[in-house]
Length: 267
Image 1 (cartoon, helix red, strand yellow):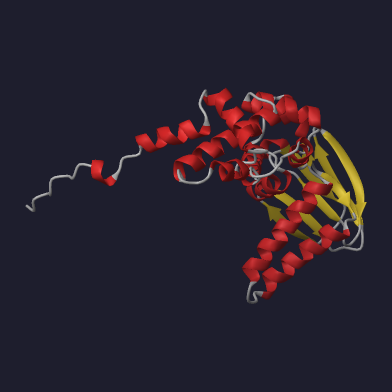
Image 2 (spheres, rainbow, N blue to C red):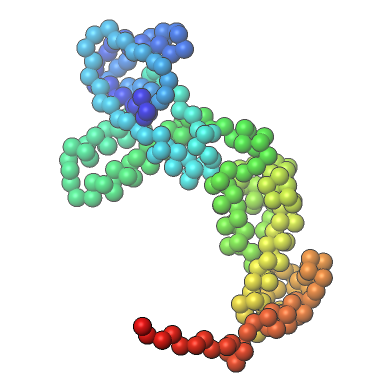
């Protein structure tokens, strides 16, 4: 199967067996029990008598999308194994609600189905899936989603103090793991990387608003004061913020210096 399969049983009882990796495993199921079948594996099923089930098929893409959004992980890090038998009231209720909505065909059904699918994915990821966080950390880098989120977080909060515990919570790592990962991903410690982004923000602000007071630029960029910003500019650019602003003004053409183009003659 290309998709994950969730089977909700509607029977008084019976034996169900599954063979995976060359071995059979049998269990007794009751009405309301749920079986989860993974995707892309050679597997066989057997049952002792007539059974009635509701099958729900969940795409790999849908589970990946929710995993990336909710758990900040790459799709290859998520694994949903076979679950032969579970008495999961929440899973049972979601499957039944999805089935009811599909049968009812009422207004807003698409929106509700999307919401229920997201709820289903989150529940499966929380309770049944294996998310291989350690493999990603050991590789020394961030996932695409993690990198996007951490860069956006720093950009959106550049005006204030950003602490190592905040970054660690966002990445779901320890402080030492966060430092190692930043060094691998950005070539700098978290403190040095944030300072570099403050510097870049200040430069961009000076270019866009050359008449803005340098004190305001320093505050908006998250520096402790104007003197702190000046020291960083001197160290990174070998120039003061005022000198950088003067250079920007010299490089910006004025209206009088722009040569008018010759008019294009109509054919």
